[in-house]
Picture 1 (cartoon, rainbow, N blue to C red):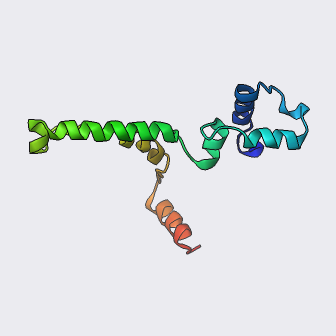
Picture 2: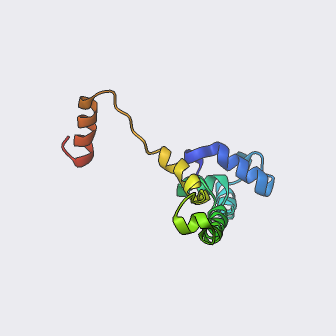
Picture 3: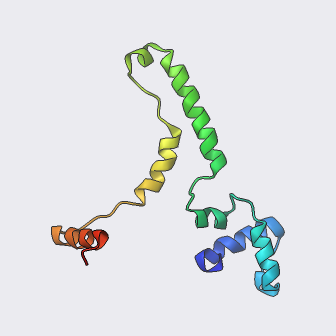
Length: 120
């Protein structure tokens, strides 16, 4: 955890346990405190690759389904027009934007392609 993001760990320990300098404690005690951090703590979310807490995603999913049900009852819904914006798509889009690669030339693209498929 420390090597991944020490600042996030320090913030989580300070917020949860009011520990402002974890280095003063024995390493085993710090490890126990780290295990006790909630699942939506900064460091645990970073380690699991989550950008949005699970609870937020669940609430967004509930909102999206409800808005679709209500939209389906309208004239626009019956004709398939003006579909409501899905909050979950907006939240997940942020994660997908981080996966974009750009290349300056076709050769640079081909080099990356070969590396990914095992050519180099």
